[in-house]
Length: 447
Ligand code: MV4
Image 1: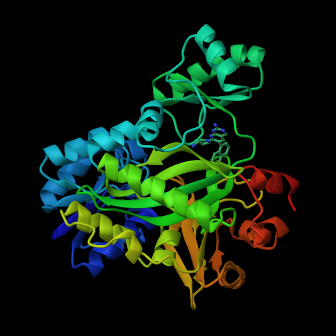
Image 2 (image 1 turned 45 degrees about the vertical axis):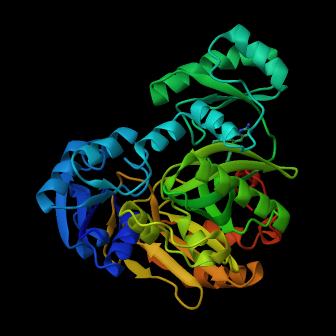
Protein backbone atom coordinates (compact mmCIF):
# COMPACT_ATOMS: atom_id res chain seq x y z
CA UNK A 1 0.00 0.00 0.00
CA UNK A 2 1.04 3.63 -0.53
CA UNK A 3 3.03 5.24 2.27
CA UNK A 4 2.04 8.81 1.46
CA UNK A 5 -0.84 10.28 -0.53
CA UNK A 6 -1.15 13.88 -1.68
CA UNK A 7 -4.73 15.16 -1.53
CA UNK A 8 -5.24 17.70 -4.32
CA UNK A 9 -8.39 19.29 -2.93
CA UNK A 10 -9.85 21.30 -0.06
CA UNK A 11 -12.68 21.41 2.48
CA UNK A 12 -14.88 18.53 3.53
CA UNK A 13 -13.83 16.20 0.70
CA UNK A 14 -10.12 16.67 1.46
CA UNK A 15 -10.91 15.79 5.08
CA UNK A 16 -12.96 12.76 3.95
CA UNK A 17 -10.00 11.44 1.95
CA UNK A 18 -7.59 12.20 4.79
CA UNK A 19 -9.72 10.08 7.13
CA UNK A 20 -9.61 7.04 4.83
CA UNK A 21 -5.83 7.40 4.50
CA UNK A 22 -5.37 7.71 8.27
CA UNK A 23 -7.36 4.55 8.95
CA UNK A 24 -5.17 2.69 6.46
CA UNK A 25 -1.91 3.97 7.98
CA UNK A 26 -1.15 6.17 4.96
CA UNK A 27 0.52 9.56 5.58
CA UNK A 28 -1.19 12.55 3.98
CA UNK A 29 0.03 15.69 2.27
CA UNK A 30 -2.44 18.59 2.19
CA UNK A 31 -1.86 21.15 -0.52
CA UNK A 32 -3.66 24.43 0.03
CA UNK A 33 -4.04 27.99 -1.17
CA UNK A 34 -3.10 30.92 1.09
CA UNK A 35 -6.86 31.29 1.82
CA UNK A 36 -6.96 27.77 3.34
CA UNK A 37 -3.89 27.86 5.61
CA UNK A 38 -6.14 27.42 8.70
CA UNK A 39 -8.44 24.77 7.23
CA UNK A 40 -9.20 21.63 9.26
CA UNK A 41 -7.88 19.25 6.59
CA UNK A 42 -4.61 21.21 6.55
CA UNK A 43 -4.33 21.07 10.37
CA UNK A 44 -4.83 17.30 10.41
CA UNK A 45 -2.46 16.42 7.54
CA UNK A 46 0.98 14.99 8.19
CA UNK A 47 2.57 17.50 5.83
CA UNK A 48 1.31 20.64 4.14
CA UNK A 49 2.40 22.60 1.09
CA UNK A 50 1.06 26.02 0.12
CA UNK A 51 0.58 25.92 -3.65
CA UNK A 52 -0.59 29.43 -4.45
CA UNK A 53 -2.91 32.38 -3.90
CA UNK A 54 -6.70 32.07 -3.37
CA UNK A 55 -7.90 31.90 -7.01
CA UNK A 56 -8.27 28.19 -7.87
CA UNK A 57 -6.62 28.70 -11.24
CA UNK A 58 -3.39 29.61 -9.43
CA UNK A 59 -3.63 26.97 -6.68
CA UNK A 60 -6.01 23.96 -6.82
CA UNK A 61 -5.85 23.94 -10.63
CA UNK A 62 -2.11 24.62 -10.77
CA UNK A 63 -0.79 21.30 -12.10
CA UNK A 64 2.91 22.26 -11.93
CA UNK A 65 2.58 23.37 -8.29
CA UNK A 66 0.74 20.16 -7.31
CA UNK A 67 3.25 17.87 -9.04
CA UNK A 68 6.11 19.81 -7.44
CA UNK A 69 4.49 19.42 -4.02
CA UNK A 70 4.18 15.67 -4.62
CA UNK A 71 7.85 15.47 -5.63
CA UNK A 72 9.27 17.44 -2.69
CA UNK A 73 7.18 15.55 -0.12
CA UNK A 74 7.89 12.16 -1.69
CA UNK A 75 4.22 11.22 -2.16
CA UNK A 76 3.46 7.93 -3.93
CA UNK A 77 0.02 8.83 -5.20
CA UNK A 78 -2.36 11.74 -5.74
CA UNK A 79 -6.08 11.76 -4.94
CA UNK A 80 -7.83 14.53 -6.91
CA UNK A 81 -11.04 14.54 -4.82
CA UNK A 82 -13.90 16.08 -6.79
CA UNK A 83 -14.22 19.23 -8.87
CA UNK A 84 -10.96 21.02 -9.69
CA UNK A 85 -8.72 18.47 -11.55
CA UNK A 86 -10.71 15.30 -10.77
CA UNK A 87 -12.04 14.85 -14.33
CA UNK A 88 -9.10 16.33 -16.20
CA UNK A 89 -7.60 13.49 -18.29
CA UNK A 90 -4.46 15.54 -19.04
CA UNK A 91 -3.87 15.92 -15.30
CA UNK A 92 -4.30 12.18 -14.70
CA UNK A 93 -1.77 11.50 -17.46
CA UNK A 94 0.67 14.10 -16.12
CA UNK A 95 0.47 12.52 -12.64
CA UNK A 96 1.42 9.12 -14.06
CA UNK A 97 4.12 10.52 -16.37
CA UNK A 98 5.77 12.04 -13.31
CA UNK A 99 5.85 8.65 -11.60
CA UNK A 100 2.92 9.04 -9.19
CA UNK A 101 -0.20 6.89 -9.05
CA UNK A 102 -3.42 8.68 -10.00
CA UNK A 103 -6.14 7.56 -7.58
CA UNK A 104 -8.97 7.38 -10.08
CA UNK A 105 -9.97 5.91 -13.44
CA UNK A 106 -7.81 5.35 -16.51
CA UNK A 107 -7.21 8.71 -18.30
CA UNK A 108 -8.81 7.30 -21.46
CA UNK A 109 -12.06 6.68 -19.57
CA UNK A 110 -12.02 10.20 -18.09
CA UNK A 111 -11.51 11.60 -21.60
CA UNK A 112 -14.23 9.39 -23.12
CA UNK A 113 -16.87 10.42 -20.57
CA UNK A 114 -15.85 14.10 -20.75
CA UNK A 115 -17.06 14.17 -24.34
CA UNK A 116 -20.84 13.79 -23.89
CA UNK A 117 -21.49 12.69 -27.49
CA UNK A 118 -18.75 10.05 -27.32
CA UNK A 119 -19.96 8.99 -23.85
CA UNK A 120 -23.51 8.51 -25.10
CA UNK A 121 -22.33 6.48 -28.10
CA UNK A 122 -20.17 4.34 -25.80
CA UNK A 123 -23.09 3.83 -23.39
CA UNK A 124 -25.30 2.67 -26.28
CA UNK A 125 -22.58 0.23 -27.43
CA UNK A 126 -22.34 -1.03 -23.83
CA UNK A 127 -26.05 -1.87 -23.85
CA UNK A 128 -27.37 1.10 -21.86
CA UNK A 129 -30.64 2.75 -22.92
CA UNK A 130 -30.11 6.36 -24.06
CA UNK A 131 -32.47 9.28 -24.75
CA UNK A 132 -33.63 9.34 -28.40
CA UNK A 133 -31.44 11.98 -30.05
CA UNK A 134 -29.18 12.99 -32.90
CA UNK A 135 -26.67 10.37 -34.01
CA UNK A 136 -23.84 12.68 -32.97
CA UNK A 137 -22.84 16.33 -33.16
CA UNK A 138 -25.18 18.49 -35.24
CA UNK A 139 -23.80 21.91 -36.01
CA UNK A 140 -25.66 22.62 -39.25
CA UNK A 141 -29.19 24.12 -38.90
CA UNK A 142 -30.64 22.02 -41.74
CA UNK A 143 -29.25 18.80 -40.28
CA UNK A 144 -30.56 19.89 -36.86
CA UNK A 145 -34.09 20.41 -38.23
CA UNK A 146 -34.02 17.02 -39.89
CA UNK A 147 -32.79 15.33 -36.69
CA UNK A 148 -35.37 17.15 -34.51
CA UNK A 149 -38.24 16.12 -36.81
CA UNK A 150 -37.08 12.52 -36.43
CA UNK A 151 -36.59 12.70 -32.63
CA UNK A 152 -39.86 14.58 -32.03
CA UNK A 153 -40.31 17.96 -30.31
CA UNK A 154 -39.64 19.27 -27.74
CA UNK A 155 -35.89 18.79 -28.16
CA UNK A 156 -33.05 19.78 -25.87
CA UNK A 157 -29.85 21.23 -27.35
CA UNK A 158 -26.83 20.13 -25.29
CA UNK A 159 -23.13 20.97 -25.48
CA UNK A 160 -20.91 17.99 -26.25
CA UNK A 161 -18.10 19.39 -24.11
CA UNK A 162 -20.60 20.36 -21.40
CA UNK A 163 -22.41 18.52 -18.67
CA UNK A 164 -24.04 19.73 -15.51
CA UNK A 165 -26.70 21.58 -17.47
CA UNK A 166 -24.77 24.65 -18.58
CA UNK A 167 -25.66 25.99 -22.02
CA UNK A 168 -28.69 23.69 -22.55
CA UNK A 169 -31.59 25.10 -24.58
CA UNK A 170 -35.12 23.76 -25.10
CA UNK A 171 -36.75 24.06 -28.53
CA UNK A 172 -40.48 23.30 -28.69
CA UNK A 173 -40.83 23.71 -32.46
CA UNK A 174 -38.87 24.27 -35.66
CA UNK A 175 -38.82 28.06 -35.37
CA UNK A 176 -37.48 27.89 -31.82
CA UNK A 177 -34.79 25.44 -32.91
CA UNK A 178 -33.68 27.94 -35.55
CA UNK A 179 -33.32 30.64 -32.89
CA UNK A 180 -31.83 28.48 -30.12
CA UNK A 181 -29.22 26.53 -32.11
CA UNK A 182 -26.80 29.43 -32.70
CA UNK A 183 -27.36 30.60 -29.10
CA UNK A 184 -26.51 27.16 -27.71
CA UNK A 185 -23.45 26.93 -29.97
CA UNK A 186 -22.17 30.34 -28.85
CA UNK A 187 -22.68 29.49 -25.17
CA UNK A 188 -20.99 26.11 -25.60
CA UNK A 189 -17.99 27.78 -27.25
CA UNK A 190 -17.84 30.42 -24.48
CA UNK A 191 -18.23 27.99 -21.51
CA UNK A 192 -16.36 24.95 -22.77
CA UNK A 193 -14.14 26.18 -25.63
CA UNK A 194 -15.93 23.96 -28.13
CA UNK A 195 -19.21 24.91 -29.86
CA UNK A 196 -20.29 21.34 -30.75
CA UNK A 197 -23.88 20.55 -29.75
CA UNK A 198 -26.23 17.57 -30.03
CA UNK A 199 -29.97 17.08 -29.74
CA UNK A 200 -32.12 14.93 -27.49
CA UNK A 201 -35.83 14.52 -27.04
CA UNK A 202 -36.70 16.64 -23.98
CA UNK A 203 -38.15 14.62 -21.10
CA UNK A 204 -40.63 16.87 -19.29
CA UNK A 205 -40.72 15.52 -15.72
CA UNK A 206 -38.04 12.94 -15.07
CA UNK A 207 -36.32 11.93 -11.87
CA UNK A 208 -32.53 12.09 -11.77
CA UNK A 209 -31.33 8.63 -10.80
CA UNK A 210 -27.64 7.79 -10.62
CA UNK A 211 -25.90 4.57 -9.74
CA UNK A 212 -22.63 4.20 -7.83
CA UNK A 213 -20.17 1.72 -9.28
CA UNK A 214 -16.76 0.45 -8.25
CA UNK A 215 -14.50 -1.35 -10.71
CA UNK A 216 -11.00 -2.76 -10.28
CA UNK A 217 -10.03 -2.66 -13.97
CA UNK A 218 -9.46 -6.44 -13.75
CA UNK A 219 -13.02 -7.57 -14.42
CA UNK A 220 -14.37 -6.96 -10.92
CA UNK A 221 -17.33 -4.56 -10.83
CA UNK A 222 -20.03 -3.97 -8.23
CA UNK A 223 -22.73 -1.34 -7.78
CA UNK A 224 -23.75 0.17 -4.42
CA UNK A 225 -27.31 0.98 -5.40
CA UNK A 226 -28.83 4.08 -6.92
CA UNK A 227 -29.22 7.61 -5.58
CA UNK A 228 -32.15 9.90 -6.29
CA UNK A 229 -30.71 13.37 -6.93
CA UNK A 230 -33.87 15.02 -8.25
CA UNK A 231 -33.93 17.57 -5.37
CA UNK A 232 -31.92 20.31 -7.05
CA UNK A 233 -32.07 23.93 -8.05
CA UNK A 234 -29.98 25.69 -10.71
CA UNK A 235 -28.28 22.34 -11.37
CA UNK A 236 -27.02 22.24 -7.78
CA UNK A 237 -28.07 19.16 -5.85
CA UNK A 238 -29.61 20.01 -2.47
CA UNK A 239 -30.75 16.64 -1.05
CA UNK A 240 -29.90 13.12 -2.20
CA UNK A 241 -31.35 9.82 -1.02
CA UNK A 242 -30.98 6.11 -1.48
CA UNK A 243 -32.88 4.02 -2.35
CA UNK A 244 -34.98 6.21 -4.62
CA UNK A 245 -38.60 6.43 -3.40
CA UNK A 246 -39.63 6.43 -7.08
CA UNK A 247 -38.31 2.99 -8.05
CA UNK A 248 -39.55 -0.50 -7.33
CA UNK A 249 -37.31 -3.52 -6.64
CA UNK A 250 -37.51 -4.80 -10.21
CA UNK A 251 -36.45 -1.44 -11.68
CA UNK A 252 -33.63 -1.14 -9.14
CA UNK A 253 -32.25 -4.59 -9.96
CA UNK A 254 -32.56 -3.97 -13.69
CA UNK A 255 -30.58 -0.72 -13.44
CA UNK A 256 -27.90 -2.34 -11.27
CA UNK A 257 -27.41 -5.25 -13.65
CA UNK A 258 -27.20 -2.92 -16.67
CA UNK A 259 -24.62 -0.67 -15.01
CA UNK A 260 -22.39 -3.50 -13.77
CA UNK A 261 -22.43 -5.28 -17.14
CA UNK A 262 -21.56 -2.04 -18.98
CA UNK A 263 -18.68 -1.21 -16.62
CA UNK A 264 -17.28 -4.74 -16.78
CA UNK A 265 -17.31 -4.55 -20.59
CA UNK A 266 -15.56 -1.15 -20.44
CA UNK A 267 -12.94 -2.40 -17.96
CA UNK A 268 -13.68 0.55 -15.67
CA UNK A 269 -11.38 1.18 -12.71
CA UNK A 270 -12.11 3.12 -9.49
CA UNK A 271 -15.35 4.78 -8.35
CA UNK A 272 -17.77 6.11 -10.93
CA UNK A 273 -21.37 7.20 -11.31
CA UNK A 274 -23.72 6.57 -14.20
CA UNK A 275 -26.42 9.23 -14.49
CA UNK A 276 -29.87 8.43 -15.82
CA UNK A 277 -33.15 10.21 -16.29
CA UNK A 278 -36.09 8.08 -15.21
CA UNK A 279 -39.60 8.65 -16.47
CA UNK A 280 -42.63 6.34 -16.68
CA UNK A 281 -40.74 3.16 -15.86
CA UNK A 282 -37.85 3.80 -18.28
CA UNK A 283 -34.21 4.71 -17.67
CA UNK A 284 -32.19 6.83 -20.09
CA UNK A 285 -28.41 7.20 -19.68
CA UNK A 286 -27.30 10.83 -19.92
CA UNK A 287 -23.75 11.13 -18.54
CA UNK A 288 -21.08 9.36 -16.52
CA UNK A 289 -19.02 10.99 -13.78
CA UNK A 290 -15.56 9.48 -13.51
CA UNK A 291 -14.90 10.67 -9.98
CA UNK A 292 -15.88 10.41 -6.35
CA UNK A 293 -19.08 12.43 -5.86
CA UNK A 294 -20.25 14.79 -3.11
CA UNK A 295 -23.17 12.46 -2.33
CA UNK A 296 -21.11 9.23 -2.10
CA UNK A 297 -21.69 8.94 1.70
CA UNK A 298 -25.34 7.89 1.36
CA UNK A 299 -24.20 4.86 -0.68
CA UNK A 300 -21.62 4.13 2.02
CA UNK A 301 -24.29 4.30 4.73
CA UNK A 302 -26.56 1.69 3.11
CA UNK A 303 -23.76 -0.59 1.84
CA UNK A 304 -21.16 -0.33 4.62
CA UNK A 305 -18.50 0.01 1.90
CA UNK A 306 -15.90 2.76 2.40
CA UNK A 307 -15.71 4.06 -1.18
CA UNK A 308 -12.51 6.09 -0.69
CA UNK A 309 -10.78 3.14 0.94
CA UNK A 310 -11.76 1.04 -2.11
CA UNK A 311 -10.40 3.73 -4.43
CA UNK A 312 -7.07 3.58 -2.58
CA UNK A 313 -6.93 -0.23 -2.64
CA UNK A 314 -7.83 -0.39 -6.33
CA UNK A 315 -5.27 2.29 -7.27
CA UNK A 316 -2.68 0.17 -5.43
CA UNK A 317 -3.51 -2.74 -7.77
CA UNK A 318 -5.80 -4.78 -5.50
CA UNK A 319 -8.84 -6.53 -6.92
CA UNK A 320 -12.29 -5.85 -5.49
CA UNK A 321 -12.30 -9.12 -3.61
CA UNK A 322 -16.08 -9.38 -3.30
CA UNK A 323 -19.02 -9.98 -5.59
CA UNK A 324 -22.33 -8.22 -6.01
CA UNK A 325 -24.08 -10.95 -4.00
CA UNK A 326 -21.93 -10.00 -1.00
CA UNK A 327 -23.06 -6.36 -1.08
CA UNK A 328 -26.06 -5.91 1.24
CA UNK A 329 -27.96 -2.67 0.81
CA UNK A 330 -29.66 -2.02 4.10
CA UNK A 331 -32.10 0.70 5.18
CA UNK A 332 -32.34 4.24 3.89
CA UNK A 333 -29.94 7.20 3.77
CA UNK A 334 -30.46 10.90 3.05
CA UNK A 335 -27.87 13.66 2.62
CA UNK A 336 -28.57 17.36 3.11
CA UNK A 337 -26.01 19.67 1.52
CA UNK A 338 -25.47 22.60 3.84
CA UNK A 339 -24.15 25.66 2.05
CA UNK A 340 -22.86 28.97 3.41
CA UNK A 341 -25.67 30.82 1.65
CA UNK A 342 -28.75 32.83 2.43
CA UNK A 343 -31.49 30.14 2.57
CA UNK A 344 -33.97 32.28 0.60
CA UNK A 345 -32.00 34.00 -2.17
CA UNK A 346 -28.96 31.65 -2.12
CA UNK A 347 -26.43 34.47 -2.10
CA UNK A 348 -23.06 33.27 -0.69
CA UNK A 349 -22.48 34.01 2.99
CA UNK A 350 -18.78 33.58 3.74
CA UNK A 351 -17.26 34.72 7.04
CA UNK A 352 -16.35 33.63 10.56
CA UNK A 353 -18.17 30.72 12.21
CA UNK A 354 -18.77 32.09 15.70
CA UNK A 355 -20.66 29.08 17.13
CA UNK A 356 -20.50 25.49 16.02
CA UNK A 357 -22.29 22.43 17.32
CA UNK A 358 -22.72 19.38 15.09
CA UNK A 359 -25.51 16.86 15.73
CA UNK A 360 -24.75 13.27 16.71
CA UNK A 361 -26.47 10.09 17.80
CA UNK A 362 -27.38 6.85 16.07
CA UNK A 363 -27.43 7.04 12.28
CA UNK A 364 -26.02 10.58 12.12
CA UNK A 365 -22.88 11.42 10.14
CA UNK A 366 -21.49 14.90 9.52
CA UNK A 367 -18.86 15.35 6.81
CA UNK A 368 -17.58 18.88 7.32
CA UNK A 369 -14.32 20.74 7.83
CA UNK A 370 -16.02 23.49 9.87
CA UNK A 371 -15.02 24.40 13.42
CA UNK A 372 -15.74 27.28 15.77
CA UNK A 373 -13.62 30.26 14.73
CA UNK A 374 -13.08 29.04 11.18
CA UNK A 375 -13.47 31.68 8.48
CA UNK A 376 -15.31 30.40 5.38
CA UNK A 377 -13.39 31.95 2.46
CA UNK A 378 -15.34 33.64 -0.36
CA UNK A 379 -13.33 32.11 -3.22
CA UNK A 380 -14.73 28.60 -3.50
CA UNK A 381 -17.87 26.46 -3.62
CA UNK A 382 -20.26 27.33 -0.76
CA UNK A 383 -20.74 23.72 0.44
CA UNK A 384 -19.57 23.67 4.08
CA UNK A 385 -21.18 20.55 5.52
CA UNK A 386 -23.03 17.39 4.59
CA UNK A 387 -25.52 15.99 7.08
CA UNK A 388 -25.93 12.30 6.28
CA UNK A 389 -28.58 10.24 8.03
CA UNK A 390 -29.20 6.50 8.04
CA UNK A 391 -32.29 4.68 9.26
CA UNK A 392 -33.73 1.19 8.86
CA UNK A 393 -36.66 2.68 6.96
CA UNK A 394 -37.23 5.94 5.09
CA UNK A 395 -39.54 7.04 7.87
CA UNK A 396 -36.94 6.39 10.57
CA UNK A 397 -34.40 8.25 8.45
CA UNK A 398 -36.72 11.27 8.13
CA UNK A 399 -37.40 11.37 11.89
CA UNK A 400 -33.67 11.34 12.65
CA UNK A 401 -33.04 13.95 9.98
CA UNK A 402 -35.59 16.35 11.49
CA UNK A 403 -34.08 15.89 14.93
CA UNK A 404 -30.50 16.34 13.65
CA UNK A 405 -31.38 19.53 11.73
CA UNK A 406 -32.84 20.95 14.96
CA UNK A 407 -29.60 20.20 16.84
CA UNK A 408 -27.23 21.62 14.25
CA UNK A 409 -25.86 25.06 15.19
CA UNK A 410 -23.71 27.03 12.75
CA UNK A 411 -23.53 30.63 13.96
CA UNK A 412 -21.99 33.74 12.42
CA UNK A 413 -22.76 32.87 8.80
CA UNK A 414 -26.01 32.15 7.00
CA UNK A 415 -26.56 28.54 5.96
CA UNK A 416 -29.19 26.54 4.11
CA UNK A 417 -30.21 24.64 7.28
CA UNK A 418 -33.55 26.56 7.43
CA UNK A 419 -34.30 25.49 3.84
CA UNK A 420 -33.72 21.84 4.80
CA UNK A 421 -36.01 22.27 7.81
CA UNK A 422 -38.80 23.47 5.51
CA UNK A 423 -38.09 20.67 3.07
CA UNK A 424 -38.35 17.84 5.60
CA UNK A 425 -41.79 19.17 6.57
CA UNK A 426 -43.08 19.31 2.97
CA UNK A 427 -45.78 16.76 2.11
CA UNK A 428 -44.38 15.84 -1.33
CA UNK A 429 -40.91 15.23 0.10
CA UNK A 430 -42.33 13.11 2.92
CA UNK A 431 -44.26 11.14 0.29
CA UNK A 432 -41.16 10.82 -1.95
CA UNK A 433 -43.25 12.39 -4.69
CA UNK A 434 -40.91 14.78 -6.53
CA UNK A 435 -39.10 15.19 -9.87
CA UNK A 436 -36.17 17.37 -11.06
CA UNK A 437 -38.38 20.51 -11.17
CA UNK A 438 -40.06 20.15 -7.78
CA UNK A 439 -37.56 22.14 -5.69
CA UNK A 440 -37.47 25.13 -8.06
CA UNK A 441 -41.24 25.43 -7.60
CA UNK A 442 -41.00 24.95 -3.82
CA UNK A 443 -38.31 27.62 -3.48
CA UNK A 444 -40.19 29.97 -5.82
CA UNK A 445 -43.38 29.58 -3.76
CA UNK A 446 -41.44 30.19 -0.54
CA UNK A 447 -43.64 27.70 1.34
C1 MV4 B 1 -32.16 16.30 -19.90
C2 MV4 B 1 -33.40 16.73 -19.36
C3 MV4 B 1 -34.55 16.36 -20.03
N1 MV4 B 1 -34.47 15.67 -21.19
N2 MV4 B 1 -32.13 15.61 -21.04
C4 MV4 B 1 -29.41 18.71 -16.85
C5 MV4 B 1 -28.01 18.45 -16.43
C6 MV4 B 1 -27.46 17.46 -17.38
N3 MV4 B 1 -26.66 16.52 -16.66
C7 MV4 B 1 -28.62 16.84 -18.05
N4 MV4 B 1 -29.77 17.62 -17.68
C8 MV4 B 1 -31.00 17.35 -18.19
N5 MV4 B 1 -31.01 16.61 -19.31
C9 MV4 B 1 -33.27 15.31 -21.66
N6 MV4 B 1 -33.21 14.64 -22.82
C10 MV4 B 1 -33.42 17.47 -18.19
C11 MV4 B 1 -32.19 17.79 -17.59
C12 MV4 B 1 -32.29 18.54 -16.38
C13 MV4 B 1 -31.88 17.99 -15.18
C14 MV4 B 1 -31.36 16.71 -15.10
C15 MV4 B 1 -30.95 16.19 -13.90
C16 MV4 B 1 -31.11 16.93 -12.74
C17 MV4 B 1 -31.63 18.18 -12.80
C18 MV4 B 1 -32.03 18.73 -14.00
C19 MV4 B 1 -32.56 20.01 -14.03
C20 MV4 B 1 -32.96 20.55 -15.23
C21 MV4 B 1 -32.81 19.81 -16.40
